[in-house]
Length: 124
Image (cartoon, rainbow, N blue to C red; front, side, top):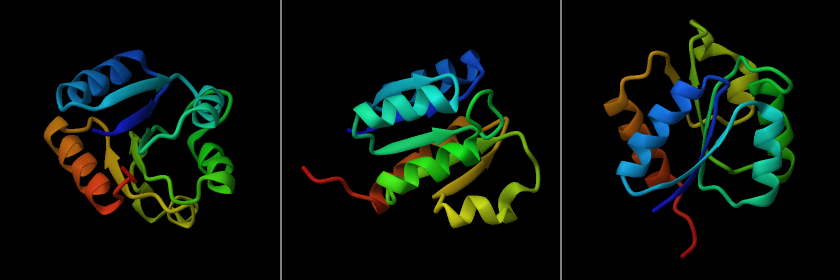
């Protein structure tokens, strides 16, 4: 299965998403902010990132802009409480795969993860 990085400053959200995705058979790492996530992406080849936008240190948009320099095709699903973000140019310019509004329905999350991974197959 896939190696997924969850980036969110709320530990409860990270744990909830991790538990659901590990139950699906994925390997999951967590980062509490964008700076921690950048360090993780530099060390590990992830198949997918679940990304919050409002975080301390490096926010979600800054994280996206930075990872696109080295990993332009890394799939990213944004999970955010910010409403109306679906038309945000910065997100689409950085090639996000999906935007989910918090609170995220876990069935929708799992369906989007499967869809994005199916659309972005990883080498064996």
